[in-house]
Image (cartoon, rainbow, N blue to C red; front, side, top):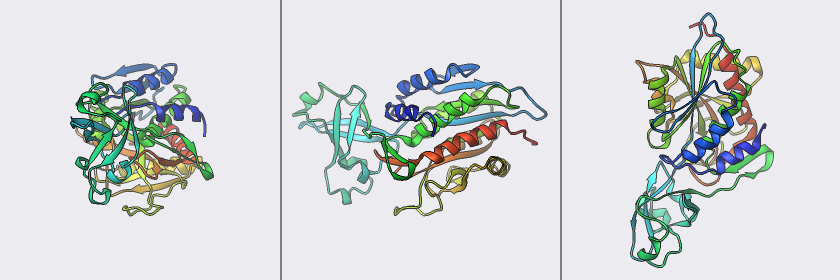
Length: 337
């Protein structure tokens, strides 16, 4: 996989939903030499514009990858120094238990539970964070109500070209868009908007405002999707290492059949390994683009991911590379509709 060092930096830069500035600054530095125009909207999403040369049926294509990650926010500090928290995005209580987190100011903590974790049943009210404080007064030296934290999770190699890290959701999507933009030499028939959105994990908010601004003809979410090829509580066909996912449907969006057909054609023509993606839990930025501006044809390019929304998610580097290739091929396509 190309430029792995960039993917490492993206995963290890913290950007809890609503606090994505450091991630945006990193991406902005990477894309500035290649974009025709850079725009930051009032919510904080970054839009990198690359104008095409036009053609018989030129399209305005919006690719959206979200910069934000899940985490926790302090809602109360107990007298003994424990921090009671609420979710920022969806956290699996069982996988959060006994993991390390870090606050924006560099203070570390450990997530624990006030009851048997088996009895927590994904209730964040059962969790607390221990930062080592001896009392409420002591804790207030380091954090306050409203402080946010995210998971610690190193980027590590696994067997068979797999890698493990926090926040592949959705820094791998951001990585794919950066690399696809590098390849765009301005000769494509379509105008491409590489959009790095905010606050996807709390309701796909950044894609709502950017889609309203861009008014795309086609909207593509570039994100992760849960793997089904290992024991878990989900059922489906997604398999890690079996190619990039072409989204067909999730609870938030039914993808346009013509968009799906073009993606399949691109993959077959360019020998890009792919699989069809259907999930019955979760959602993505395609939902917001799909319902913007009286309706937008929408689809998704998805990297299959094990253990998403925790500190140690796993992807295939080959799948990530296939996603970059599909973004490029789709951008170059001369649409007939």
